[in-house]
Image 1 (tube, rainbow, N blue to C red):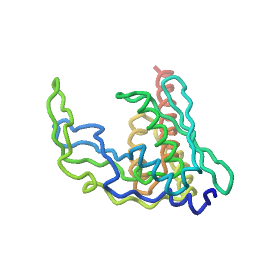
Image 2: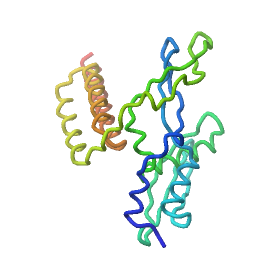
Image 3: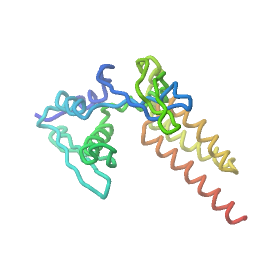
Image 4: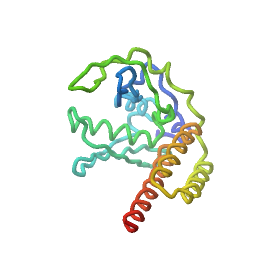
Length: 224
């Protein structure tokens, strides 16, 4: 028996807090806080697929394009195989194995697994650090990162996010400098987090700001 559309909705369910892992992306200059990123282990993703879909109703396939690994994650829904894909680059440790795991987790996000973690926003957590060649290096978190997260925003509808992208285009018409674009981007980044924008719409917004910066830079080069 294959999955149903109702079964697939269960993939979006939150995980127990203890099943979510955290890593430090960056440390403040004084070394007292670290930006904590939440992530799932690949085994947790596979367990979720097994429990919701059944081991016989999902499969993964990988392609390697230079340093990038693409995972094609397929689920059988009402008798039909449906595939969603995403990719990742090699990681610093165990490059190939890390890329396989990351690609699987990214493809799983397309199916809703762990997607809510992207709505946590910036989570700065007190930490211990040490000096390494004049720079602060993360050692460990001094507190539970969950204590420093903001409430997860309710996911915005596709229609409201499309309206937001149109509003971004209108705002960019008034931006005559790269600094103005950066300020606009920062305001919309905060708004997108508060409103619960999806990863795809956040990326679409980032592309608009990137295009605006490139346009202004080209204009400034022409005028010079």
